[in-house]
Image (cartoon, rainbow, N blue to C red; front, side):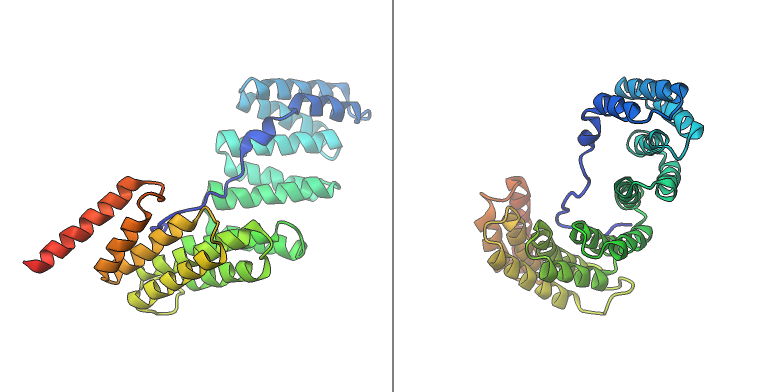
Length: 294
């Protein structure tokens, strides 16, 4: 079960890019594959038409037939890749998609296609099936393959989030700190700096979490508050500032510093994404104060 979090940053890539120029790509690809049989070309065109019509299972069937006819040709490999992508995005056939992507990796002499297939496998493990142990192993493998590649900060971020979802908070914080220190020029450093606070706060609510150095809830909340404070100083223009300030208020509330928490919530009411959430927090603190007077 995932730990409860204050805020989660969406990492799933938009699938709209896959809808761009598929018909044009098909024509260009087929024109470039003169050695491919006419039957395979015709089936590929049919598969793309079915795909554009939203008939995804029928499209996969046709893509598979193209791939089976000449699996190592550029057209056959592209058909295999398209079948896997369609199964991943539209049919929830994740195991079969992984099998096909691995087949692309094994057969492809196109390093770009092979790399794209490996990234899609990571997407399935991390975003689609939430197999976080597998995601960690897979992204570590990709980092080993291209240690200086542009995707390394994002892969490391996903490793950190995977540890977080497994409630392995020490490993998660260590990975976020690595991103914040090594990749300062990337947007992932800002996200990681914020996530350090989120992870520390969540650890405070799970003191018995596995694979985590034992700290008291009070220590965890203090660490979270300090992390949010550092984040605010480092990234004063970040759109995550209201969330970080909300995190500080949460920490104060959990540490039973109700007056300070109340003032912090009041201060961010106009900037926090949901004023209703702030109103609920303020009401609860007033109720706790009232209980203490009786």
